Length: 148
Image (tube, rainbow, N blue to C red; front, side, top):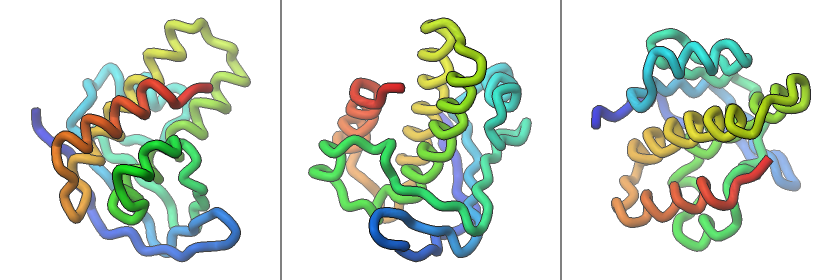
């Protein structure tokens, strides 16, 4: 499977008690989803370009709360921060969409699964690299424990 790529490093600061603020944008181009899936994400408000580029603006705040606690036992937050911030931003939009539109359970699960695949793709580009078994474990934890 072709992997996505980051366009720059994560630069931000911790804003106590539990948030982070981006000092410069983060860009990730995913290869993990289809054009149809990209258009579904665009339709609900996720900031993704037709080529699969997701951008988070300078000043974006995150608390990495979409990452369940068991993940932090496997890996340090700074090792997966870019992937975690992407997932946070996508889940934030999903939650707003779910509250506004009240979609059927199947649609909710399909959209979550698309976002989770982007996270898995981004996780594969972590620096330093994360061993394959840890990536698989982290992805399975996200799939099974992240609920809306």
